[in-house]
Image (cartoon, rainbow, N blue to C red; front, side, top):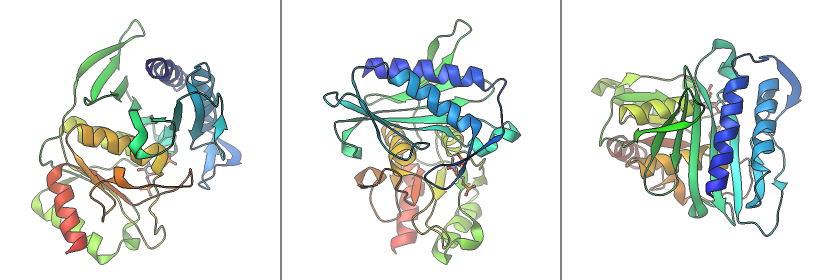
Length: 281
Ligand code: AFP
């Protein structure tokens, strides 16, 4: 698995370099979620495929930008699922965006998640990596290597409320819950790139990121295998909590389609417990 982590590091450095002088135009293709692909979505996907396919330990790749699973060595152990460029629709406004990776052993299930990583392409390149119990923040140095910065931990309660989904399609239960958090003093922080919004919550030590079921998207928008599971793994290992509104953890869910979506909530213990009470009475 170490080799895969190293190859992911090489891939995100290449993507970060390419982002300095990018082509921000759209291609003519749509991905399996129906989003029109940016040329840079496709390029990021190609960069990651190019690097990871060097590993003999790679059984398959699952990408947000690929319709089907891309199979490699059948006898190998690891399947990597990834979102090559989360928040890519924010490329034009030059906000921080990132890549998200989940490394599964043998079968794609949260039970088999062995590591989760994400990069942040902001003013500097950062990488958050959880391979065991600790969530570690790294920063790229001038020599092109990642330096360890610190371990990340969630506090019991935060101050940030990152609220996803179109408000006019929220149900009353969700709208009242979100209103309640603002009345308690929570501040709105929402960029539209899940990876950056969750990074902010993790770095500031707490808060809530939500993307609920809505009337126009009853199963939510965010994708399980390469967005929800890796970020839930990182948040929970950092001492936070997650749910889909009913379950005790997003990591209890199972999906059979590679592009399946789910409502999802990530936060500190306090906000997730409050949400479970508001949702389930
Ligand atoms: P893009 O990668 O197409 O920009 O989508 C980003 C994303 O999947 C996730 O990162 C955001 O949290 C979410 O979409 C934002 O969706 P809304 O615009 O509906 O809030």
